[in-house]
Image (cartoon, rainbow, N blue to C red):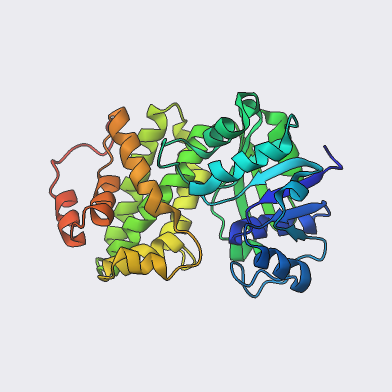
Length: 338
């Protein structure tokens, strides 16, 4: 495995940034792009102008739109497609892998709408139950553009296989990218997915001009909601106090590069969601994740009022100020409850 090729499936901004790290670390890395024009841009110009503009990519990074070729000699496969197409992409990958089972790294953040599954569960569905114990989830506070510019970044690797997590840690780690290992996939994946919903809420609040007090309250109570759901599903509360939880939440709710925060800002200022999304090249995962998160909360009896408020704004045309009023008028209760 040490000398085998690494295939990165998904050439959006995050997939390109991760592939670039691997290539710059000296690993034979092949980035698969759905769009042939993106692969050609990377191959011929050392650029991904569509998704990661103004970044010169490592000379060792190769790109292709031929998945069979991308996977032909891969000992490690990094899944970085948008969450709503992970099943489709990995289903195609399974056909090309045959009986081979490379080490899998899941770097997509979100929940599958149809099933409400986490991404590691989608990979298991697509590739077979025998891969379940070996999947490594990569998550944490990480804007692709900053990582690509070699700015200091720290993330979490979660896996039930410490051996696999440590192997992935060694592949990626360098002087500007630091990775920590742990075993809580549930908390790590839910933290990475649901912080996008809270970032939408924070953006809506800022778009309404409600101030920093409101944003801080939404972030803190949003983290409490994520923790309640994660613990109900078997995750660890401590995970949400780390990089995959509060770290990612802070970044996504406050950072100017946050797509989900930008969508929330626009909605809070009165723009139609459909118009906001139509003007975006990249995917704001929180919009789809809101629907899945609401379903999960209802199914497991977990109260998540902020998630519910965001859902009502995005999918039921509730006025944002009305949604806020309903949040603020809820029955008083202790800060810690379950």
